[in-house]
Image (cartoon, rainbow, N blue to C red):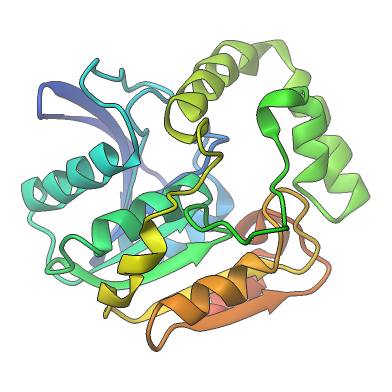
Length: 255
């Protein structure tokens, strides 16, 4: 599936965004690993939807303005993005940091959101179950931890070490720290407001996730009324990559 790269000027910054497919809009919000390529998962979704996949401010090809301090700023910004793009009944899919952004946006305004898919989402912390501290380990070790399959883990680690990805990886790591450093990848006040999420919500988690503990999935489900949880076996922190077909099936997009 071909895609095009566009720039959206909004709120004083230039948002770099990949766009492909046709149909109803789907906004994909990436995780801390950024979006250096157009992955097969988005290819599959683009067979059914018009997919919009931006680089978050500070990641990839989008600079971060000084005034943008935390995930609440990102949430309001993406609400402005959806307004600017004229979305109506958009599917919003967020992985990791992107899931957190989607939740923070949804508790504020769901008027343009049809449903949410949260894949190994940040945003909620379960006491006694620590997340992996990705800022204290090397990028190749983080890549290994992200997969349950040893071969995929090693391939990802070697990719993380490749020279052509180094500059973007450093930029993405700095941006991840900006938004997820303290407290680590959650908002201690978010849980009290998740009852406001009335858009249909699917939570997808890998049973062997070593980055964000799988126990977070049921905790998040308990806080979001009517939400559904799908736990995928033999899968780590990247269900949409490691078990793409199972993730698509859970979303009702089986090929």
